[in-house]
Length: 121
Image (cartoon, rainbow, N blue to C red; front, side, top):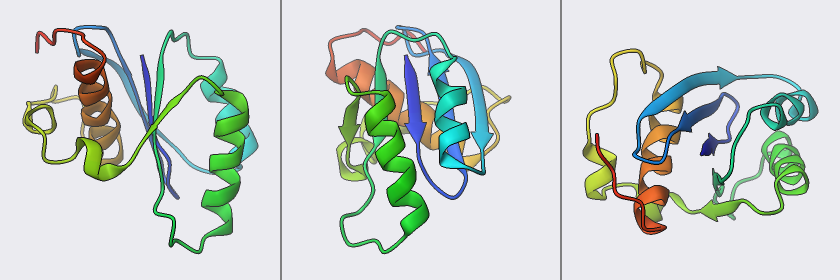
């Protein structure tokens, strides 16, 4: 699954269906190029963190629009839906150092749990 935490620095995590982090990376720059790169990652499911409705940031609005167009099947979740759940406190591999990638991975794990997958991490 592909988990995306959009931001000025976008956290990306690719997880298998038992919640293991296969790939974690950060992306910055042109929203169009970020989304074009994300579309190249093989995935069967996509979860994206939804930004706060009160934010005033044209860059993030543009990034969200590109993500919605590229991944119409994606599940969008608010931070309150995954933060402070038991899955958000499970340990991550040492290779996951960036907070942006950690957030994407933890959000992805919660999404897997919510969609009926049994985590084995």
